[in-house]
Image 1 (cartoon, one colour):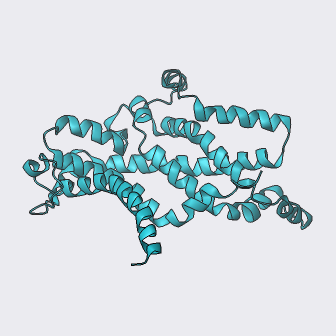
Image 2 (cartoon, helix red, strand yellow):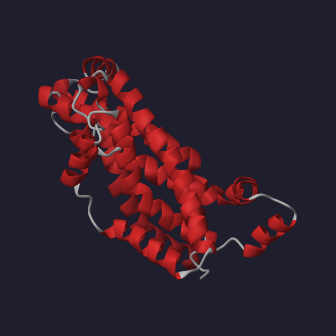
Length: 273
């Protein structure tokens, strides 16, 4: 092996070790979810002697995960779609209209990235509007919480799209909504994919908001089943791990399907001012 290859290997080894720190917990999660209760309690990294796929059936039935999965899917999909549309609209207006008013609006929106969510006042407001213990209420709260980050992503990305595209479309007779949806929005694919994954992950795994706003078992989200299921099966780690695997799979599948566009969505627009 040449000196160049040795240097390359020396650089790659630390990153391989760092990757193992991320991969190892996932491996432990999956292998222990298919073990017996006694074997899973040992928390070992060994592959199971026999595969217990019935763990997933037990979790699915006892935790009522079918209903919880439907609730989580409705909450997440509706909130993410709304976030994409509203964030893209807002980011477009803020970036294209460089006025004092839009600068102030952008600053106020970005404050939401640093100021923590005050859940008690939010809950009181939702209760007065009769939005507690409803999917509509938690969808609206999820949109409000994640809206600043979406605007931040889109506003930065719009800097990489020349204004001449807008002007050419207007000269050709394109109406405002046609300009945005037919000309501009297709150019936003990388940042839209990035936003979908990040927002999907945040809303899908949001336990604190769900535990405040969903009080009826028929309206529980999927992540809430872990909390209640663990209370009833604290000694059955194989079932707890199986529960976590079921919750994690949708996000992992979404990421692997769209990962090629994630990095370009995060970095595009970063070099333009």
